[in-house]
Image (cartoon, rainbow, N blue to C red; front, side, top):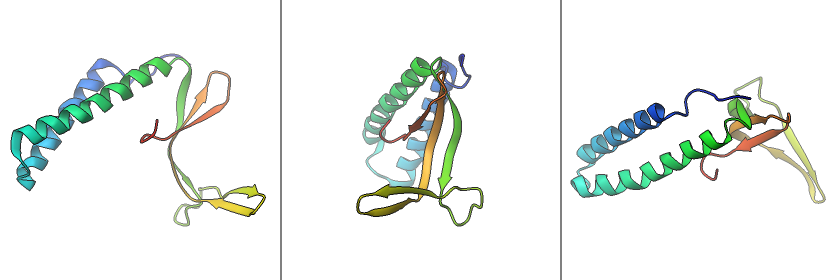
Length: 117
C-alpha cells in the first residue's frame, strides 16, 4: 500500500489551527462563556484529532481508502447500490452512508465509521 499523503504532522497542525479558529468564532457568535470554554472544548477535540492522525499513520502501510461517503440505497443517487441482508425474521434493506471504505494489503475491505473508529 505504501504511505499516503495527508496524514503528516503538517496536516495535523493545519487541522488543529482550523479547529481553534472555528471554536473561537463560535464562542464570539454565541457569547458562550469565553476563553475558558473555548480552551476546554479545544483540548477535548484536539485529543480526538491527535488520536485520529496517530491511528491513520499506524495503519497507512496496511490499508488505503478506496471510498469516502459511500451511499447505500439513496434514491437521489442512481449509482448507490441496494444492500439486502437476509435474517431469520425477514429481509432487511440497509440505507445510509459509509464514512469510508479501506482496502487492505490482502485485498479485503474495512468499513470505517469516524465516530466509533
